[in-house]
Length: 77
Image (tube, rainbow, N blue to C red; front, side, top):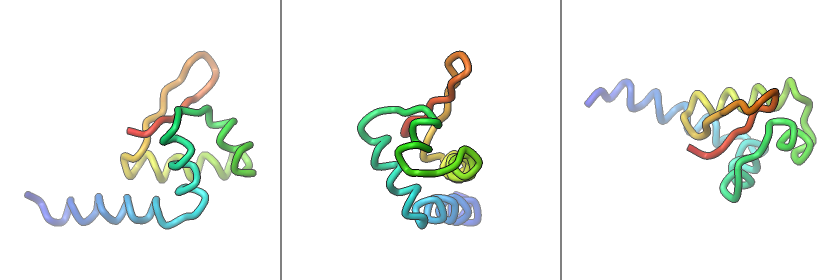
């Protein structure tokens, strides 16, 4: 067991959960996957801002992203 790697993983998770908007997105995703555009509209964020939040949640391994056609969908992992 690598304590340093575990601590880093926990830092990423807690960092992702620290932001109120991200917690709201995770709550929404607990019911169903959503497109990135839909999440941006639902949480009143620009596409640039939503991508920053999506990246933080992906790095923490809380969500996965898949592309269907031109649309990116995210879901809880």
